[in-house]
Image 1 (cartoon, one colour):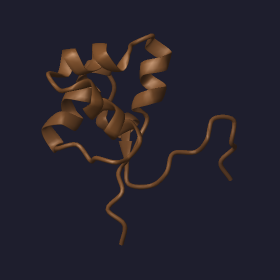
Image 2 (cartoon, one colour; image 1 turned 30 degrees about the horizontal axis):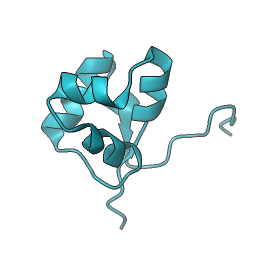
Image 3 (cartoon, rainbow, N blue to C red; image 1 turned 45 degrees about the vertical axis):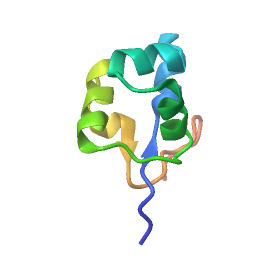
Length: 77
């Protein structure tokens, strides 16, 4: 069983015009941490995941998933 946590952080940042550095400062983490999260090289703690969801004002399930998110433009069957 894979322990990969998928996320939409980069998509949410792009939609809102937020840089990695701006998000990192708002969360109190290093900007490289945001990059690691976006690339799936690091899974956030529950606390950090909830803070990211709160920052973007969406439920945590909108940001994180245990299964890959559908690609934009892909139709679900």
